[in-house]
Length: 127
Image 1: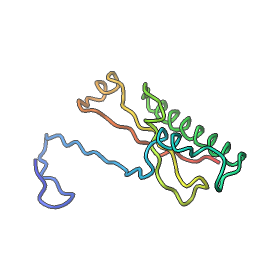
Image 2: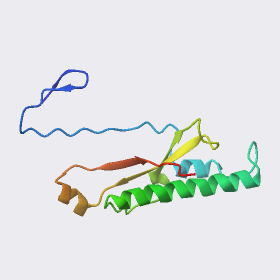
Image 3: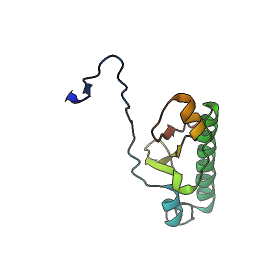
């Protein structure tokens, strides 16, 4: 199977095509942001605003996990390095958090996928 033009596949009936869709997370990981002191008061953030930014980020991560769980996916490796940040003009913090992880082997087998799966579900702000 090959491509004749950008976005077009020479797929034939019975062939399997695996397509990976990714979003560039330009702000790095939550781990890196914590190391840089993103939730520390100072600069433009007062202690109250810094605390609210931390709690809002934790809530986004929790909503992301709830979404994965609603799909029957257990993350299994939640840590700051697996939370990606993407710039956002609509958010006061300047970023939105996304959960990155791998579907468990049992889920992968049940869906018939043999390759490593990466979940990057957009977390919806429910405020």
